[in-house]
Length: 382
Image 1 (tube, rainbow, N blue to C red):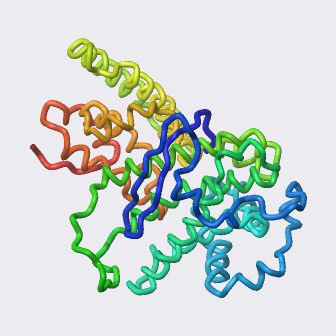
Image 2 (cartoon, rainbow, N blue to C red):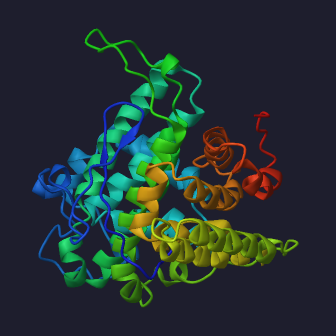
């Protein structure tokens, strides 16, 4: 999941089952105040000891052992026996996610909070009891807050090797978290609150996806800053491609050529208004990701690279519901659709695609025929 560009978006989770981003200056990669003003004790550097020691030899400090209560033990046990499997790309990742990274988290509190956050969400997703489900959701949110607070982007170039490994693993966890978080969106199961204000209406799937999009760009930027150093650590296998799967019929070139032709048509139609270069870049990176998919690569390895690499202006166009931007995004949903068997992704791809189909008029709808066919998504006639 390493990437070559550093996104500049920021994110702030809200208390309800939705996500909300708080835009920061695009000239600064630093966290928004709502993240940096949290408890400074959650920073990655926990002691003056040499953090370059082997994470397999890490021991739990006495004061941390006293603070680790039964719920955290339950969540860590669930991670080490079950949840870790959903993060693995292949069998070679198993010892890293089941053993090495949990032991590394004993010395790096934000990473530990990240493991516990995703484990709690996994338990929430599989719980049959509404009360227990929402207890786990609240717990997951609390751990996510602590985890995000530990990613100090201003210090990423001044970390030890072990700290870089902790940041890298944590960014992977926090990239997955919001996809899972938004999957658990059946608010009818949520216990009522006396002080609940009247809901103004749920945000759309596309709005939620844009917010997840922005968080993912920021996290992948943090990963990019430490990838070279992680490549020389025990977590080096996570920086290399996973085992390839059987290839699929490659339709990506024809699809990309169709998008490129449409970009040229839009440029000719509105030369002054159309963002030709922005779309060229988005289509180019989409081409790379689709080609990788068709070659049989594990989607967990590259599925989020496109999100990281597209220009920030493209995200703005999607927010504005610019039709051609929605068409390009519709083609990306084919990639995340291939992650649908992961509990944390589920039907995100078809849900986003369906909303895009509803937003497009009859002149634009035919341009998304391929992603509709590739995902089996049903769109009503218009």
